[in-house]
Length: 329
Ligand SMILES: NC(=O)c1ccc[n+]([C@@H]2O[C@H](COP(=O)([O-])OP(=O)(O)OC[C@H]3O[C@@H](n4cnc5c(N)ncnc54)[C@H](O)[C@@H]3O)[C@@H](O)[C@H]2O)c1
Ligand SMILES: O=P(O)(O)OC[C@H](O)CO
Image (cartoon, protein in one colour):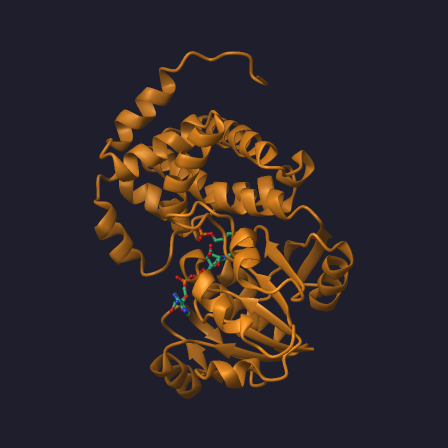
């Protein structure tokens, strides 16, 4: 299959490395200098250091060239760049299948990625989301990973999952786009909370409690927005929550750990050098939960640390002083 991957950050590059031996893949970056550097070294030293790019992988900074004759476009830019990237795809003369891999809510609009896709792409373009527990560095090293590909068109989801699946990148299909996207978005906010918790050395018990109560928050919001409970208990929900809250490779978790050291958010983001979607999604989850009347105290605490200058230790104390009710209300 002829595939274009748009976005040459850690995730776009890792997917390109994983798919290139099996498909005709072109990896596109908007930055010509980045593509030139990658062509020279056959590495993406800035975003995915230490990984050799397969010889078959084509690299391009020319979007028209990358999209010529493709059967599938994988959009691997952050949520903030999804809308503008989709506009480029929407002008193609004939429909092409589009899969997005970003995780979060769009800032300002509080939209999920599939809603942005509905805004921009003509209905004739088949579409779906690919998500699940997947650190780019591990996928690029061909370590076993399992993902979910969801589309409201179940046949498209099944067919595309089968085409992309291989033994080291197992791809399950689903029709629950909302559930898959809510899991991917909310786990990033909860990973910041887990980083704060671990940065303050609250212990393993606290982390397990935080993760479980966080799952309850994710599930409440997911159900309220039309997702299915089983999805939130699957790879893109609890699976990704466990990975991101416990794995030190998580950028969102790293943000939380640095917040626990009282570093400023702007310094943390400069230091990180990669997107941490939970930082932007925390604000949209706060607004969405308020609008829908969903109780999400852990996500709310993260929002207040990020945007209301609440100290991380004060946020933890406030959470611990809440009166517990029935666990499942
Ligand atoms: N890194 C992972 O392990 C991983 C795994 C699964 C999903 N994701 C998700 O994938 C998305 C991308 O993450 P990443 O890890 O690749 O981020 P990254 O910070 O490593 O790279 C982001 C890339 O997007 C590019 N970009 C930003 N704005 C752009 C625009 N307007 N047009 C074109 N390119 C633009 C940047 O130049 C950069 O190459 C995020 O939503 C993230 O949550 C990441
Ligand atoms: O590094 P993070 O926190 O953006 O997480 C990466 C992936 O989403 C994990 O599945």
